[in-house]
Every structure is written in structure tokens, then in C-alpha cells.
Image 1 (spheres, rainbow over the protein chains, first blue to last red):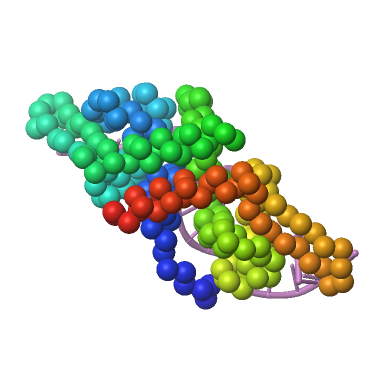
Image 2: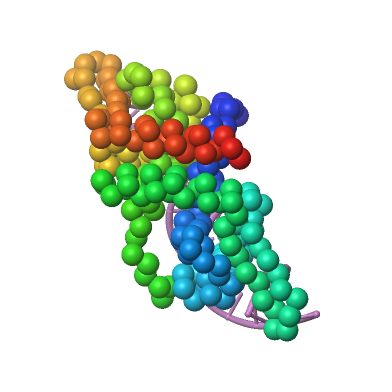
Length: 100
Length: 100
DNA sequence: CGGGATCCAAGGAGATACTG
DNA sequence: CAGTATCTCCTTGGATCCCG
């Protein structure tokens, strides 16, 4: 019954980048592609949480998921062109965070 | 046991603005001061949650809490000068959010 | 190797009653 | 009026096991 606030675009943006790992996932993908297990090892995140985060980022067209039909399986994640537009936004956050 | 990532400044920034209501609290305070009950009525947030959010924002020097020693009690919240530096950051988020 | 399924703990958020 | 205290969900994140 709380008042329905029109959802602010800034809130939509936050809903994408404010999960615990999305920031670091994106950071890893800025200058290279990464495989599922590479992200796990580099970030120290659990499989379940990484999967959830990747799925959410993919649904929002921030990252791309490329499956190589080989044995053993190989999946590479990368930033989409749209995802790259997020970088300066995160830089802004980063700069402000440094003043804390 | 997860790897201790050095906490990114961007993550610190997010920890401040990513709670459900902080964004809207700040938005209300951009152009005016607000009292506790005014925020409750305007935002439709519960007392407990509003209190928690305000306390967190105050601890991080984003908002100022001014108590007027009158009966009945009067408390006004406002953006600090530092808090105002957050506005362009939120604008950036807002703009990016619109492209979603 | 890249997940899916399940279970569990912790914290965020809401509703409500009470107080100086 | 401006909170505090309490109780109850619900959502996130973490750990583990399983499978093609």
C-alpha cells in the first residue's frame, strides 16, 4: 500500500549495478573476455551468485554470452557496446566514492 | 574465505545510494528541507526504514539533521554541501538509466 | 566446464505499537 | 512529532551436490 512512486531511471540503473558482484564482473570485462570459471577464480564468488549476476547483466544487454560448441564446454562473457556506455558512469561513481 | 577484494570506491558509493529509499530522500532534499513526517508522507516509507536510511546518510555526511528544541519536536533534514556533490553523480545514473 | 537445484544464514524492508 | 522496539517477510548471497 506504499505510494507507488514512478520508478526513477536512476533506480533502474542502480538495480543493475548494485548487486554485490556486478561491479566487479563489469570491471573484469572492460579489457578482456572472461570464461565462467575464470570469473569464479578471479572474484571468489560462488557459482550460483555468479550465474544470477551474469544472467541479469545479459538480460539487460550489458554483457554478451558466447557459447563455443566444444568439449569441454566453453563460454565467454564480454561487454556489449551498450555495456561499454556504463564505464564512464561507473567512473563517475568511482570518483565520488574516493571523496568519502 | 572468499577472496578479499580491495573495496572499490565505486562500491562504497553504491553502498550509500543503493538502499531502496536513499535516492528518493536525496531527491526530495535537493531543493528544500524536509521534516521527518513530511518524508514519510511524501515517500510512503515506514518510520523504521526512513530512520535507518536517514541515519546512514547522516553518518556519511550526505545529509544534515537539525533539531529545533520546541514542543512538539521539530527536526529538519537537508543536504550538506558534500551531499550536493552527489547530485551530478545521480544525474549521470539517471541519464544512463533512461537508455535502458 | 558451465551451470541447475537445493538448503541455509543474514540483512533489508514493512507493519504496528509504544514513548519522551 | 520524531523517533525506538519488535516481529515478520522477502531478497541476496554462500555452500554443496549433481549433471550433460
